[in-house]
Image 1 (cartoon, one colour):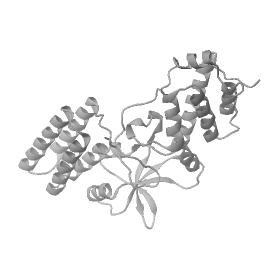
Image 2 (cartoon, helix red, strand yellow; image 1 turned 135 degrees about the horizontal axis):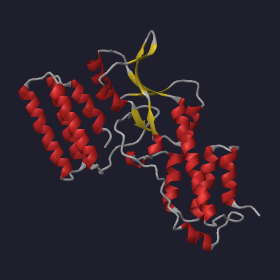
Image 3 (cartoon, rainbow, N blue to C red; image 1 turned 60 degrees about the vertical axis):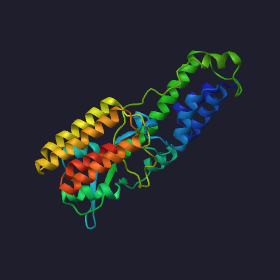
Length: 290
């Protein structure tokens, strides 16, 4: 008689059916075992992620910022390393079906930057072309393979505990054992800053109110360091630092993310007006990670 968990293991290893079908069979198992958290993860992979903070670490990708020259196509962009580090890394929201299509495409995988950020980049790098993040296909393939690896590890845990499922059914003993098996995919890491809203590849929102203290301290420190290198008047620099201190206090007192983002937007606009465009670009990249 067929064992559902063993069937899924074979499907993953033999690679005879697509990853979407594998996930659907895993969803069937998770639902029958009442594994709510694991079922949510499968739903996110099938339908895409809505909350930025829910995106697993394995969905991080590293690309290269390039500008599109109308005559020569995509060309490399030289920019300060502090900005490049923020813009080169992204987490992808997309349903795995979209990632599979991208992994088999012969076209470059590119993400267009928002117009506001592109304008700041044009000012700082003096390149009057649209900017894109170019992603290697290998990064997309790695995400798909990671999903399959986590599914296989989960199946092996089920088998080791004697949870196999016979003829598409699980008995009460199997359901009880399944409840004590960890359901979380242990691959969630720190939020990677950056936003590519408006592109056809990445979608979603960044409305989480969970601001990690270590990330806050790092963000404030980077903004301060950048401000000290800006060629603006001492008065403007001091005003900017005072605004930043107020923002830091608001974050530490657990103000709503929307309030913090509004304050950061105000600081960014002030910096643009006084000519501190590099720091303004850093703030744009940082705040979009919330």
